[in-house]
Length: 448
Image 1 (tube, rainbow, N blue to C red):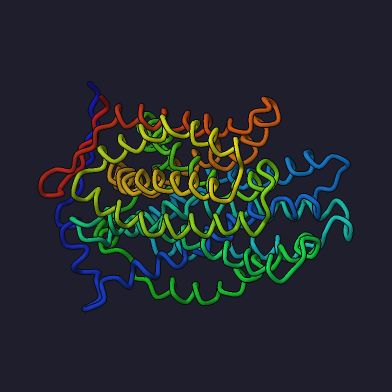
Image 2: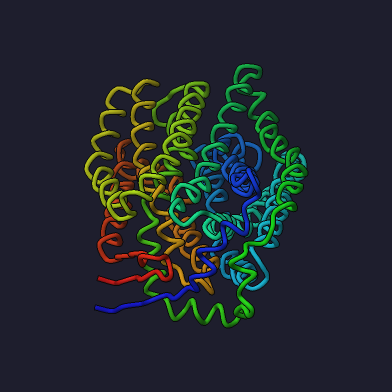
């Protein structure tokens, strides 16, 4: 058995929450960080919700399938550069500070979102239009590559030790709020505009809404304090030293990627891919699809903090194991039942079931990943794992699912893709055993 032990100074972990918390308002740092993460994930995901409209505006062709695949590939391209963002910006945050890193990622996401929202269509400026959209998407990807890790690490370092699962769960709960806002705006658009109007210009409205609230979120994040745990370390690794440390811990990173697969694939399956799957495969209307997405967002938002708190009481691995097994055995039957008689009721039932599985798994996953990462490279290591998984598996889930259906003729095949991701998570959970020491002075990670 190989063993990798991460030592952390006990005074930093014990004293950080008390030193950080504002008197009477210990939730304020969590709220400020989560709000910024909410907008960043909203801006990053909204592209996938309107992939069909974006395909017609920026990737016109004589083949509807080809245009949609180009749009979905552009959606996925933002994920391809997420590992680059993790490698470049993760060491920066580990060296210069959590607060500054969160401001930087918010700024990059703002630039990318504005560029996509304001780019004229292909009919207006020709080939420059899709190029600008792709460039904006790549800038979004650089930001998202380290945003999740930056927020998770910040919340971990300011949370009370016995409630870290609950606090860190708000990182993903804020993403559920982004899903809810996107769905509400989608319902409003479908109620006020025709399908042709949404295709021509209405899809820009949700992006412009995201742009409009950026100044408020900058103000919230500027008011954040640096975490005491980071300030107590007198000398932080230089970026090149950080990268060398990541290479040394390659096995931990690989297992982290396998562990994260189920969370990433399921999230983008039930959020970003649902509008396309509902419209193109199930032939449901836009209003029905957005209603399902809104319900999914509410469901995830309600369940995640609960599951985070349960992981504080029962441990991370029992939740990870149980949710992996349930996903493995139930996904394909659920999709088969859905496509046998498509309806909004069946789509709602399946997506809510998958939302519960995602919330249960992710409620333990994010805090588990944060705990097992070496403190000196915590942001970079977490971000590399999460962004690499999103790049290879999650971001291309809409494109992979669309292609698999096209190649096999089986509309339930996305269920097998999700089952495969669950199997990878189950294997990784069995290989990794992470146990916090009794007084939180160290985290011991064992490769079984």
